[in-house]
Length: 454
Image (tube, rainbow, N blue to C red; front, side, top):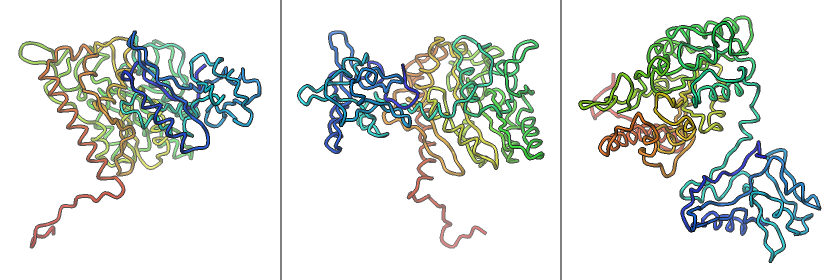
């Protein structure tokens, strides 16, 4: 069984042939500690073109623990790491035999098993892997916040749509004392239901597209007036927040309304025929930005809604995607902690129907959008910008675009144009993060000699 704590993930067949850098880094760590490590092993099968690494999964019900004759192996209740007590270990090797995943190695020369202990929370192999094949998954940070999601079973949304998963995840973090608001759009079906039966098990309400934040703010003010603190969450699409209902959102931000607004951005009006919205990407196809002889999709870049909201100088703004759930969970917790203003989270939400992508590609699209810097993960917290997930070696944006039919018309020149736009947008955010970094001097415009600002 998988662990509900922390573990390492090795991207399937992502290792370059012959690479053993993770092993070298792991062995180097052994020389700095008293405990032997060697907990990760490169596996190369060139005859079938398969290259990966084997590492302990930190299983939820470890068979190595069950089969250890001396009870030397145990799983920590604090961090979920499976550890070997060397004072009890006989060196029999039964743990390596019992592990069905090859996660424990056995050194016959030293008569001792070798397994990963996650370097006590700072895995050296993650930093040492130049291609970012290995990642550290902190599922415990997510699960400790999980409560009931407040929705009925099933989904009324299209096959493969991650908006339902995103809303369930959101409500598991915010908890049962959440008041949920939505507006016309795809995901509102998960709030208001169909016909006479509601889909939400929480107090919820569907507003018009033009009064979502206003209505939510009214409820929040009422409960504040009677001395009760409740969480008010608005969950709506880009058509509402970025276009039709932007003015009420801007007004609520300016007034300092204490609500959480989450824009699930599927980059178009998908519920009414896949029309373009203000967040539709450059050169993207929609039914109102067609592809033909004279034009190829949307001719202008999208508005940057998170930056627009940050310009309101509200307490908290962030970008997120369900492809990085631990990052999204931390941002929801931060948003809930705000008591003196509005919090805004811009959540990328692929639409298999409108994006012309496969129904099982939503999570891959979410991750690739981040890994190509098409959709960087960052936050604005009380005047300071920072990246929450830095990509050391970003992939070409073409790897992301080619998974969607809405960009199927792009050729080399158009791909280059989109890449230039991605680089420009990323550098904009990067400069903002560097301005707010500790120890960095900010550029200050000074008047010319003899001039005055008066």
